[in-house]
Length: 470
Image (cartoon, rainbow, N blue to C red):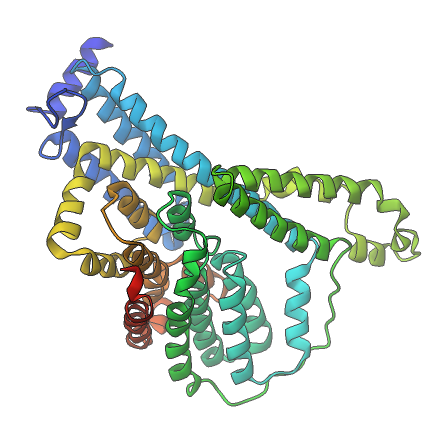
């Protein structure tokens, strides 16, 4: 086995130079292992970008790529007498991922619990029953997406609003298409001014680059990002009224209390981080116990609830829900595990490229030669093509020396830059699947210049009203 490792190392690395005098790390940016790692990551990400066509879950290629990249790094380091350097580096990346994963897992569990208690279905049925016109629904779904995504996440919010649009739009492709574009832009913009609204804002907050309350300085720039395209698109929305549906869906028992517990969990996470200087994930996991205890209460009091004795079993199920189905571990099992494992692959892949030395080179080029403002605007444009998660993780790994205003700028651009293309954000990709054939890549591309106008205006607004933070 040792001979095999040695042969692989000789094949991959024709020559090695030390990046530091103490021999702790190796400069592999100009050697075979570095080039191979970049090629593997690019190939893996091509599979991620074509998930819609290949039906290959996005987590699979990046997890494989992460394993191969770190295996190549470890081979090199072991053969140069640095047996534990790669191990320490990958443990550091793994800790960062674990904090992110557990935080998201709690948030997803609460969202799944609220979905099972039919909170989102009740909101959807209320909107449909009101008999709003297409233009009113265009603004209502966009505004709700903007204000719900900071608390929930932009993906869940976009799917909820798209369900409303699909239900009332019927065969009106023109309305559905433009309303979906508006929802994607609004959800991404709303997620940019809250630590809980997007994965990228969460990463920036957990890394202590920006304080919790400082994120809300992005509220007005985010609103501008949503409003400018919406105002222009408004005139293309059909001025008609859809058929009104009388469907009524009631929330199940405990729904409002679960919303309260979720807000209490967010307060706990913020308090743990701001006042006790503990990682936010500790507060979120503490908040998970609130839901666990409440789930226990719902199960124990299920048969005592008045509707449980109703003669109509369907009515009982509608109002109370299944006893067993509210086991909180079922909500955890229904979390978006493909997304969580995708984050694992991304964090380790980007961490491996950083350990090889490529992120230092990128940081030198972007932040030292281009300047922070130009680099951060470019990050947003790049996130329209590549998912904003690896882009933001790369920036956080580089850790350029920037002011709070610049960290807020990159948070804004990474969050809203994905709106430029339908494939640029999880919300856009999900809606292409949900409104298949009605909201497409090219229907979104038609409005990209207008969305780009909002993108530029939001940056200018941030640099104007938050000038004191730069």
